[in-house]
Length: 561
Ligand code: FAD
Image (cartoon, rainbow, N blue to C red; front, side, top):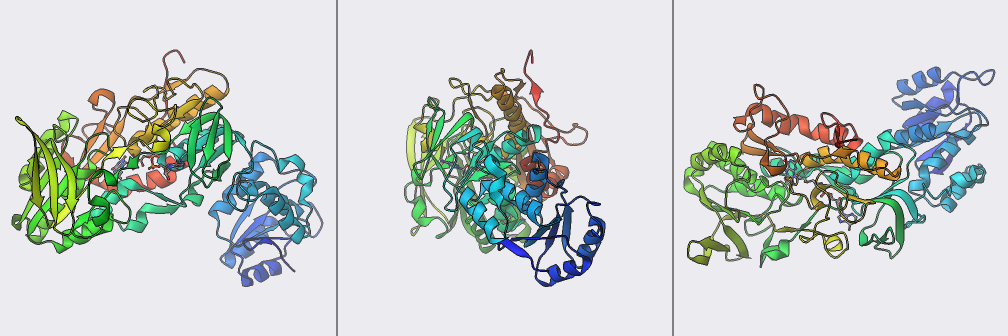
C-alpha cells in the first residue's frame, strides 16, 4: 500500500487492512482517521478491527465516517479539526479511495492555507479538491495564505487578541453556535498562564508550566490570523492589520489586554534581569526572582507597586510574601530588610482583606510605605528613587537595594487609546454590566483592556467570557444584551508557601465568595485556597475556561431578558 501525502503531516489511503496498519506504523504515522462508514463494500475491514490493530501498534485512532457521495457536513469537519489539533501527527486518513479523507482534511485547512495551496496539495495526492466548490472560498470561513496574510476579509465575529479573554470568549461562542465565522487576531505563537508567574517567582512552578502553543488553544472552528491590529475603525466596521489589510466584521470583540510600561520608570528597561532587578510580570524574568531569593542571605529587598489600574493588584505583594517566607524558612529573614513601596493609599483595595495581610506585614517585619512611587532605578549603583507623598507634599527618597522586585505601570495599548473606542482613561469604554461599547453597539470588550472597575484578573475573564458570548450572539440576531456581569474578580494572595488569602469581590468591593464560608473563609489564610491555586486553577484554565467549559460561571440574565 502506498500512502499519498498532502502535507508532511497528513496523507491519505484507500481502505486499509490490518497489514496496512502495520506498514503505516513502520512508516512513522501516529494517528489513523477513518472517513468511511462500516458495511459499504464486501471485504471492507471494519473500523473496529483497524482501530484495534492501530492501538496495538501504539497509534491513535478516530472514526469520522462520511457517507459515500456526500460532502462532509459541519459536524464532521469540526470533528476532523479537533482530531488534527489533538492527535499526534503524522496522520493517515482513509476511506474507500482516500477522496473523503482528503476532502475532510481540505475543509479544515481554510484557517491556515490558501485555496490554491489546498488544491495543489490535493493534486499532488491525485485528488481533485476543486469539487468542493465555494466551500473552499466561502467568505465566512476563510483565513490566511501561506505567508500568514489574511486572504478573506469578512467574518461574523472578529476578536482582537487571543489571550485569556479572546480564547475563552471564542470557545464559549462556538460552543453555542458552531457555524458562526470567528476570526481571532493574535500575533503571538505562545500563550501564557500569567497567574502562574507568581509561583514561578516563588520557586513552585517551572516557567514551562505556564506556556502553551497558541495554535493548540485556538478553538476548533475559529480562524487564527497571526497578526496585530494596528487600527480600529468602528464606523466602517473594520480593523486594520499590521500588513496593511483590513478585516470587516458584524461584531467586534476587543481583548488585547493591557500594556506594561517598563519605560515609565527611568532606567528600568536597561537593568531588568540583572543587577538584582526583577519582575514576576514577565515570563522570562520570573525565574530570576526565585534565583535572587535563593541567593540573598542579608541586605535590602525592595518590592514596588505602581498606580492602579494594574492586572492582579495583589501580585506585587504576593512576590514579597513568598520571598519573605523562603527567607524565613532558611533562617535569614532577620538579616534582610524588606520594604514594600506602593503608590496606593491602603495595602489592598478591599478593606476586609487588609487585617490578614497586615498580620503578614508584621510577621515578616516588612517596612510598609504607602503613597510611595518608584520613579527611577540605577541598576549598576543599585539605587531606587521614590516619590513619596507626605503631609507636607511630595519628597524624593533614594534607597539602595540588593534585590528589587518591580511591577511596571500599566496602561491601555496605544492602538486602543488612540481609537474611537477609548474612554477617558484610554481603555475601551463599555457598559460595566453588558460589556457592550457605550457608543458602538456592535463592539464588545472584556479582560484587562475593558474600561471597567473590576479587578483585572483571569478570574474576572472567566465570568466575563460567557456574558460576552451570549450578548454577542444576541447582537448578531439583532437583539438587546441578554446577560450581565457583576464585576467579579479574584486575587489569591500567596501570603506564605502553602497558604493563601483568597480575595473574591465584585463591583464596589462587595465580597463574592465562590465557596461556602464554612469551607473557605477568604479573609483568612487557608491551605484549601493554596491547593486551589496550585492544583485546581491551572487545569481549570487550560482545559475548562479556554475550551468554553463554563464551570460555576453561568451568565446571569439581564433584567427583562
Ligand atoms: P492577556 O491574557 O494578556 O491577552 C491579551 C492578548 O492580546 C495577548 O495574547 C496579546 O498578544 C494580544 N494582543 C495585544 N495587542 C494586540 C493587538 N494589537 N492585536 C492583536 N492582539 C493583540 N489573574 C488571576 O485571576 N489570578 C491571579 O492569581 C493572577 N495573577 C497574576 C500574576 C501576574 C504576575 C500577572 C502578570 C497577571 C496575573 N493575573 C492573575 C492577571 C491575568 O493574567 C490577566 O488579568 C489575564 O491574563 C487577562 O486576560 P486578557 O485576555 O485580557 O489579556
